[in-house]
Length: 390
Image (cartoon, rainbow, N blue to C red):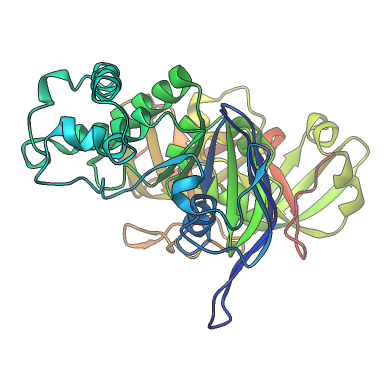
């Protein structure tokens, strides 16, 4: 067991590209920490530096109490699980799992004990004499996990291990990996670009963008209290709706002007966001989560001042909920996520999406009244793009 500490870590390649900037992270003993971000944000580079597969350009890396900047990968007491499994196709499952122990000249009896114990944990006992080509994708991933488990390392490092699996199997495997990590109580650093994976698996999640750490916190705190526009939009699916809006305050209440819509801000909004008082008469960025929109016909207690009218562009019926895409005539805000694509819905452009109750009877092309939970709005400074909170 061990902590993993990154103190002022930098990575600069020979061509001058600065991939990681002053990264400071402390992964606690037995913690499951997820590194997440869009393509090219530096998450895999950071993981590879922990593993020793990339040199460190600056800063200090510790595993346990030991500085490992110059320590070879094989001597760092870590086990890595790759997205392509990296299994030997000519070896049986038994030999794949035990291969590292054989190289380390561990006695045969101990190898057999460790391999069979790992196989039992991963439900691979009936497959030990098969070869990787005879296994499903999920079984191959379990073999790769087994190879890591038998080494009894100080830390697991996992680089997008589920990216090659289909959607249903990914859901199953992420639950299994999270459960396994808690059972083994091994410090784990897990890289993914999938924020749903990050939210459901990690004790804490570290969000990276362009090589800079944006925020590290529990999944729920990231969702409820994002520090900036990028984190707000990146965490959550569908993404947070972001618009420019003008704030007007009067005593303990106020309004936001959102294009042609004026929405009332109740007193609880200013209680939650007292710094918003400094923005009276100014333009800000507001964020509205999809679940904070609702078919007004199903929200009779929401006052008229907290409703907008819009035409439905697209409906995605998911059984337990309905995703309703519509347009608001306000300036939308680019979150800064290079992987985000402008959303096109139906015949026109939809710049907002709401998560409606499945009992809603709204139809595509219909003009509907939409209730907005303005007390749950997020507010960001227009220039710094940092949250206005506290």
